[in-house]
Image (tube, rainbow over all chains, first blue to last red; front, side):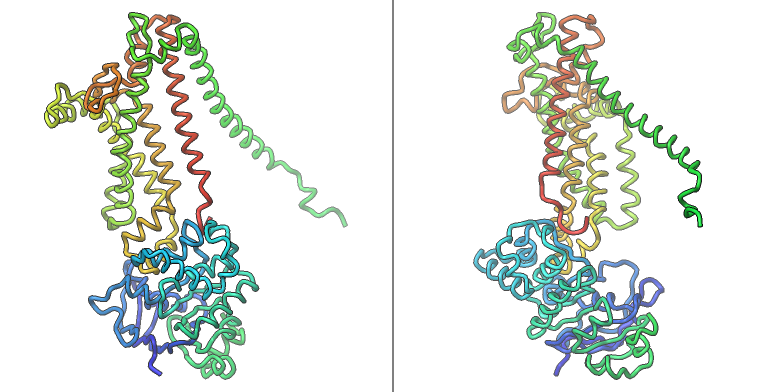
Length: 251
Length: 304
């Protein structure tokens, strides 16, 4: 199977400080790939390189290539806003934008220039259903998004990304601020979503990594230690450092 | 086994706390007290006018104190005309500048621009008034072909210029307070930099921007010196369309110009303080409206 995203010898520096060291990694389509490891391992940076969100950060340097469907996303002439519509991103803190539930979900489509009322309604319902939130908010679509619970807000953020009909969904510790029940709902939603989307997630714990991973990549100090199908990596890690980490001996 | 040590320890450090707390309390209450005293004084000196002359006279259209005519309407309208025009000029300029300084300008440019804007705020209004008289007024006269350059519009230009530093600084702080994650969220949805600024960052900073404009407005409506120097000071009703480009007289300018030569305790004296009361009421209404617009809106989404 052709990988959806490929990192080819990617190194990345904030000033002189390396965040990623010569990372080569293939991310398969229609699966959940978990990127995990101790803090400062370059996980978030890895995610932000895929949708070029780190373009805004000053004083950084990158070598190597990041390919999406075989095309270099850093090639000259790439339409960055379009790339970001193909690669949705959900952040660690639930971050509803100012406005109602409806406005939040339709932010992206409206920015992309969709005006047709019926089409927007369709996107609204579809995105909220995919994020497993529709039943809970269908009667409060015009309430301020800030009134939703934390777990609902995070699923709203997922719905907001899905509204752009992306191909890839990047999630950076999407459940770090949520209680176990809300976390369960978000993970459930992800299991449904992986049939249509390529999902890359930075989990907030090793347990979560083990629960959701189809594939798992372990990062340590900017270095990719190993990448295997999830059930292999968490039962029979190849590298000693991975084993130490997942059994809780350090980190 | 005695009591735990922390329960029996003598509480001498509390003395210091008590002194500090009391001092702060006295200072806080005294500043509130001063405001109340000023208000009391203003009312005591001004309130007689409301029964010394008829309401038709007081809210009439002619202000000729020497003939016993104290119509404040042209002064109120003059103030509103100048202030509203000033805000219409300063609001887009101020917000656009704040957005530029905070969101667009590179770091080195921001480091130069910010202190320069703050220096602008420190220019005394009389200097701006002089600048208005000698530079802006002749320009307005020539461009418009008007008989005089001392017009409501000239006053509005100067006032807008005075309100700008306040609006820019406060709006810029408001934009700065928007978490970086909002920008990331906007960009991650495929918004361009401009779309992110106008549709995500500026709305998120809305309440701060409203505050900025209200502070600017507060400075503008109470401003006296510069306005007195450049508006021409004719107490005429600004009712026709071209009033903006004719001389007007504001409430503040009237008080400042006439207070020096009025007999204390006379009707005229009371009338000037009466204008002060009206000005106070208008300012109060503006502030109340600002408070309502800020607090009525549903809470901002996201991080608190």
